[in-house]
Length: 402
Image 1 (cartoon, rainbow, N blue to C red):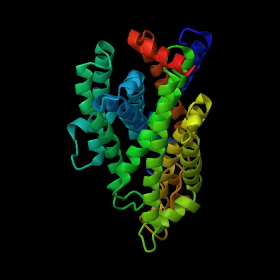
Image 2 (image 1 turned 90 degrees about the vertical axis):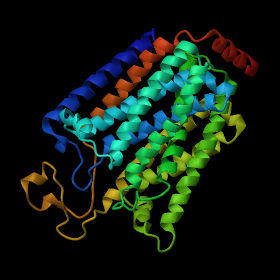
Image 3 (image 1 turned 135 degrees about the vertical axis):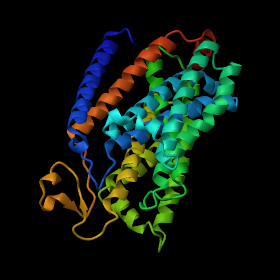
Image 4 (image 1 turned 45 degrees about the vertical axis):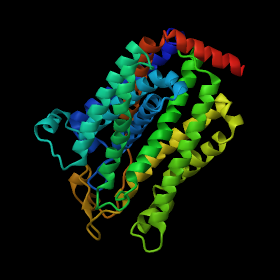
């Protein structure tokens, strides 16, 4: 895979995109966050959306890997190593999006010198740092001792709760914002964890299919189908929590009725309905049947829809609560954008609005490309020579299915 002409061409293209993304980020540093689509009314945008997505993608992979050791699920241990590699890369991408969203990266040292323990953002930084350390330790021990070693089992007991906690704390950043009725909910953390499970597992299935096709990491069809069945269960749990949230918001007299109307029939409705139909309903209908789970193509299609659906969930969850500002009536909120600084009527807004600029899009593509390159390099180093017992089991399963 990694020595082929196609792989080299892909790596070259990813390298170019990463370099262009770094250039766009430097341009943003030189000109400030005013070059983005964010403003005083909508203070979080594409960067935080991608941060939420990649934290979930990372947590889902680590939960699968650590659960295999904690609950002694022997067959899932076979995919623990690629799951940890994927988890490590995704959490690094998530961290990069947070730093990029800070704008003034030169002031990041203030996080250490002036922490605010009352801020959920500070909790998130602490738990993500611990999470990254655990991922690295987990990766080193697994490569050195194997997935069945006692050292890996001990780390798994810490990794599983931290993986759940990292996405819970991310959810609390939103759930503790009393002023935003679309976020202020008691089940925000379970919603985030459920979506982390299905999106992280979906991405893992896509990666495993690619590694198997290239011959880098053999995996039996039976195990692949079992993971697809687990994904169907995770989708159902995710859909249940979304249903609970919608019912609570839509019940007559509920405080969230206005937000629900915006979510289902407003500017962010396209993201909501795509997630419900294409990200939950269709993948579940595909994977709920055992025969479909035997088809790699159908599993990949369902997995891709799940990841796209969770991305849409992050969009409607983040942006819906910015539509109606906390200050009602004219003149509204000063936008604070570069255009608004010129004065005039355009500097005020009574309704929140946001659209990412080319800078944000290019930076996001650059970070994703950098993450893909990192995964390729780590996979080449750590997966090119899998353990003999893994090769034997994977080949046995494949032969059995054949």
